[in-house]
Amino acid sequence: MANDFDPQGGTLETGVEQQPEATLLGGAEPAQAGVAQSPSSNTPWWESLPDELKNEPTVRKYTSVEEAIKGLVNASKLIGKEKVPIPKPDSPQEEWDLFYRAIGRPDTPDGYDVKIEGADEEILNEFKQFAHQKGLTKQQVEALGEFWNNLQQKSTEMLEQQIEQLRETALTELQKEWGKDFDKELEVARRAVQALADEETMELLNAGLGNDPRVIRLFNKVGKMLGEDTLSALPAMSGHSADAKAELAKLKTDPEFIQALQDPMNPAHEEAVKKFKRLHELAFGS
Image (spheres, helix red, strand yellow):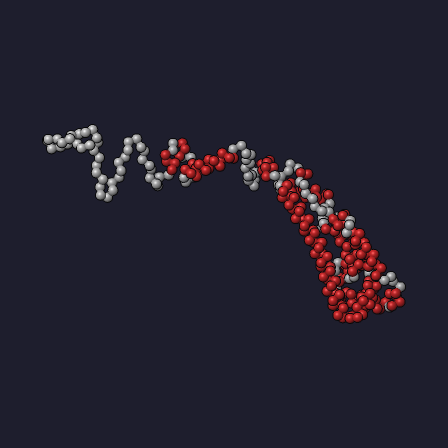
């Protein structure tokens, strides 16, 4: 609507407020009444909050409104859940017990359901008490038990492999040296061992010396010094070999012996290892 012309050289007011023209450089849009101006991009988002809120460190740790809302949602999810603070190194035992219980430690050592093959009951109870004192969870103790069982199985397998490897090495070396007389020369050494070796000497031989070619040569020479008549009066090792193999087969079906053989914590472990080595030598030779 055009303004009415004033004869005195002006225009008549029409009731519409006149706005300044924008400059060529793009003047700002006029502000609308009743609409708050947005703060500068450098102004923290919490400045528009009341003083008691914007001065809170919890509020100021968020860099945007979106982060603050996410934090509120996450906090609301934790409401109602049991929360236990992590004790300090010098905290009283009561606080540590509360923390241990919260992460999964049983109330008593008997609460651990751990199975260690062949373990002595007394030693196993001591282990449970130690684990409980250190705050281990049920899952951790059960994992340790599984690891130990696997380790003992591997140890037994390695022991058998080492004995067999030493035996094969000795056989190969002596076969080259004795040639076609190998069986005869080895039998002389075996009978000499049977005639002269006491229990202590047999333990040393079963511990590995019996597979040393130097030791076998020594007993071979001693056997020849004893003479054929003396050696012939002794029972041949072949019968002992069959008995030893039968005894080994029997022991493999004995759970108590297998447990004692595999578990170093078992009081009968040392005796079981000695017996195993002694029978192995009798069954398969030094």
